[in-house]
Length: 250
Image (cartoon, rainbow, N blue to C red; front, side):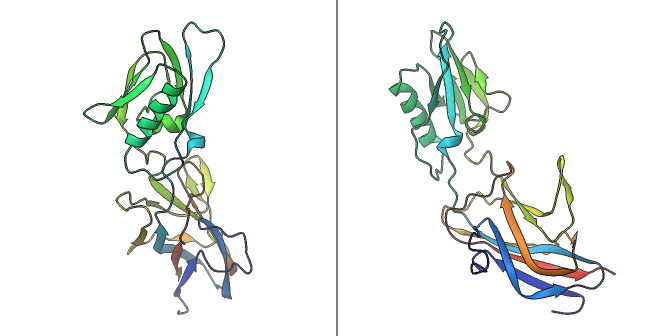
């Protein structure tokens, strides 16, 4: 640590004595001693460790409604009878979808073609089917999620459709423009989809993006890791470690 630059390492599994409600994806660290910064400072993310411990499929976000074109009552709402979990391919989700619709006699099925796209088959009598936005994106329907005829998806099945990036926010920096909002974004990082469930990802940044520090006296630092949908990253286990570089601006 020098007068002009230094590093702070922030593990998610510290400071429980002060903040017992800390989570893996949202935590506050009480520093061993306060930072008293003179002048103008900025900081940037130089290292992060995070666990690949989130489920790729959450049944609460995946449902459909359906009714025949001649039905007056309805629509009927179904949740897929598939456990929350980490699935490597879309085949399990497809099988559970067909199992769910078969059990209630919904006369609609899905299958994967040779190119990995989904074919949604609505049956001869005709159906009106509405997929939840999350389920539609998983199955590759990017333009619409309500159908009255059999249809082929725009893209291949993608269980990671709603989670390709992690957005890291902290309370010690000035707000940045993030889409249509202003927020204290430290950095957005790409999720490493090649890693298997339970493994840990290590990322370092030789050329960090430096953001102006918003305060000169810092005794706690709050961090939040969010998906692009604005939800906390749903880590099931493990811990996060973030390393931040501070430097004085000339």
